[in-house]
Structure formats: C-alpha cells, structure tokens
Amino acid sequence: MSAGWNTIESDAGVFTDLIDKLGVKNVQFEELIALDSDFLKQQSPVYGVIFLFKYPTSEPPSDKPRDGNFDFNAAEGSFFAAQTIQNACGTQALLSVLLNKTDMVDIGPQLREFKEFTSAFPSDALLQLRGEALSNSELIRDVHNSFARSSPFVDEGQRFATEENDVYHFIAYTPIEGTLFELDGLQPAPISHGSCTFEEFPDKVIPVLQRRIERYPAQEIRFNLLAMVQDLRLKAREIGDQDWLSREEQKRNAWRWENALRKHNLIGFVGEVLKGVVSSKIDAGERAYNEWLEAAQGKTRARLEEKQDKQKGWAPD
Image 1: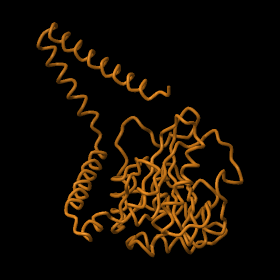
Image 2: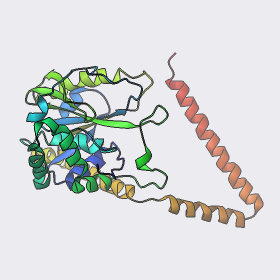
Image 3: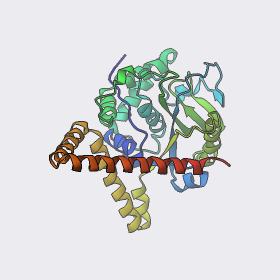
Image 4: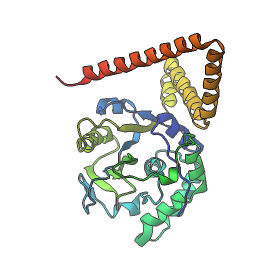
C-alpha cells in the first residue's frame, strides 16, 4: 500500500486549485453555508457535493447503511473505489464526482487515462484495485499533498480515528444514471438514495444531508459542505456581468494567495518576530517591559470576556 498522503482542508479554494492542477477544465467549488436547495440551484449546474463530517468512531459496523441502500452492482457502471490509504478521502471524494461526470466535464487527459485504466479491472476485486490504483498514483498524490498545510507538529502517519482523537472524513453525493448516490470509500458499495435526475439533484440531496446531520448531537456543528459547480466566470461572461466577473477573479486571486501561504511553515518566522519584540521591550527598561506585559494581559482578558458574553447570548433560554 502506498504511503505519504497528508491531510488537506475542506476549502473551496483548495479543491478548485487541486482539480485545476489535475487538468480539469471549467469547474470550481463553492462553500454552502446552509442546507438550502434554492441556494444550491443558484449555483447550477451542480455536479455533486462533498460533505465533511466527524468520523463516528463509536458507531458499530453494519451490513446495512443507516440511510439508503447498498447498490453492489452500481460500481461496475460508474467510478467507485475503496479507500485504501489514510488521508486520501478528500481527493477521493471529488474524484468520485468528477469521474462520473465525464459526459459533462472535461477532466483532462491524465484523469481520463486513469479512469480508462481502472475500468479494466476484474469485477471480483474492482473496488480494492481501484483504491490501490488511486493510492499509488504519483500524479494524484503529489497534487493532493501540495495543498497540505505545513506543520512541524503533526505526524500524518500517526493520526487515527479514536474516541480521544477527532478525525474527519469526506464523502460525495452525486446523481448517476437517474439515481442519487452517496459515494464513501469506507463503505462496501455505493449507497442509493432513490431516483434523481441531474436537474432534481439540488432538491433531493438536501433532505439526505439533513438526515445525516441529525444523527449527531444538536451541539455538533463541525460540518462542511462544498458544491462542485461550473466555473462561475463562464456564467458571468455569458451574461456580460462585468462586476460579477471581477468578483470571481478577485476570489481566485485570494485563493491562490491563501494556497501559497499553506505551503510555508511560518512558525520559525513568528518566533523570531516575537523574540525581537520582547528584546526591544526589555531594552526599554523593566518598567516599560512590565507595562507592556500588563497591557497585553489586559487585552487577552477582555477578549476572553467578550467571547464568554457571546456564548451566553447563543445559549437557549
């Protein structure tokens, strides 16, 4: 089994840049801040959604999904792979949508070659072999890892899902040949959620996501949802909306800047800045140093009190 896959963030800019580097044309991701089918329709065409959630370590394994039904025949006519390597689920989820939308999306020559290669595997080991092919793809792994946040404190090879260690998992939802499927590489087969055309997808996926979230305690809010949509700049150009086009270009520039920062470990730089500031305060004399320290502590206490006040305001009556 291949090694060396790092954790990536559930971020529209990360996922958009990632598929661009894989050669996909005219596709981007948009973050969904609410489970609202009308808002999702505004992003049309919507190819699928990527859902991030806390992995339920305490949930016992079952031969039947808690929602929907396993379709063990679906993988032969679509792309679905077992997840065989840790930390690959984000990229695997977006590929689960892309490689099932080749009639709508230009996925580029490298991903087309990958899909053709994995389509030829024998049916009795199809999911496992596809998962191994994905895990061992140097192209996909290198592009994926190029978006990992640099940190000297995280050993990616030692992060396992336990009750003491929160680990998160990505899955995909997309319509395939008239059926709404949940594609989770940790499951033995695609999960069918009933009939669904491409046009019906925004209306039909929202109730499925709502039921999924309702499995968690009411105070659990650590979810993230990204929609895979057509490049919004194309729509802006099509209708001649220059303001919209300008906003989308600015968003792309911001994404590129944020993604560039992710590749750099700035801890050493921050440490040197702090040493320089402290040194300058000490040089100014003990009194000046103590006054500066007390002022900083006062600001910290004020921020904590403000945060506590806000939390009280969120609490139910």
